[in-house]
Length: 472
Image (cartoon, rainbow, N blue to C red):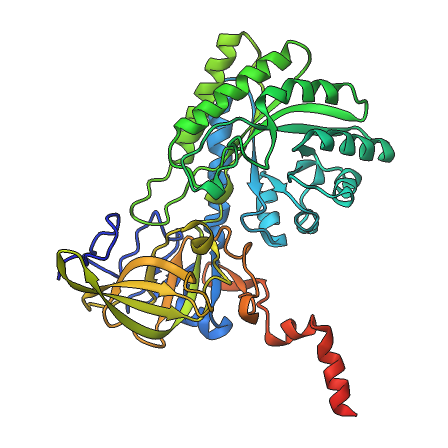
């Protein structure tokens, strides 16, 4: 059988529709002797028997090893140019108290951007001095709490925030370390909603206003100016954007060094991961070496000291270490007319989750890889994995070749769902958010309990009233 004409150019017809490509799946993902999918030494069918579906599964050892790998890569690269590098884990990607603890154990810092994320990181035992607090609209309560607990750095996103943080620090009788988030104007090669440094944008202070903002900060006794911060976007594969952003940031950094100390420079992050065979992600060592070379060259050209560096690798640490398990429901072949060719069929494979547990395809057109939790020799068929929600955009995997014998009751796994899936999950159609389990060394443990119907009803204030009326 040949490729389906409805398939996109990036999707190749597979020689084995059960194969697991190592760079896409969690490090411990494998097939058992009888063909079952296993992760962390646990069979997918055993996990589902215990926890149900949908189910987020996280390879604990993979997360931890990725954190250490990034830390080491940047420590070594920037150590060679005579400075230190600090790695921040992006709490927004996926944050629980256990994940926060893993990051602390790996000697990473943690980024948070709401009062809720701050509370989780603190409950996970993260030293508040190793936290960075982001956000374009921090509330007064969030700023006060961050100052109160001693957050290491607050990232200022606007001119008005300079004075609000200064007032909060003065009221608490402390000097608060702050960075300025700069909108560098670099247009990252990614989805529009993932590009965070374009001019028409809610994030950051324009590059042309950075010096004035820094001067204001330096004039306020309750603030300590740490340096600049830049983040051009997320899920980026083209390194040219990172290079240009670093160059622009170094120009302003050099100007500020001439008038006072600027101990650090935060270069952000956002490099992509492999969701499909068509992706080609950077290796962290290559990113670290490239950024170190840029910084060293820029400092030498400007005859300024090399600052300490901070980076935010985002989804790299947790994204590839996760997968989601679903139960297959309705199978619906749909035959379509094709220009200059015979009609072709796309098989719609419905699962018991969808955009409530993975909003990324609907938000960004994100693409994923899927495999059955069993092996099959059946001829692959072009498939679209869809959810159970009342939206035609409720797509989990837009295009994939699955074995032609896929049937109701099968277990299906979607790779690389460790980042931004649980974080973006919702209760659309009153569906409970799935549990998250961590697997390692043949054992599984709950990180986040799944929501039940009782949980959903418990927040509805009319339920108790209706029950009381029925009792009368």
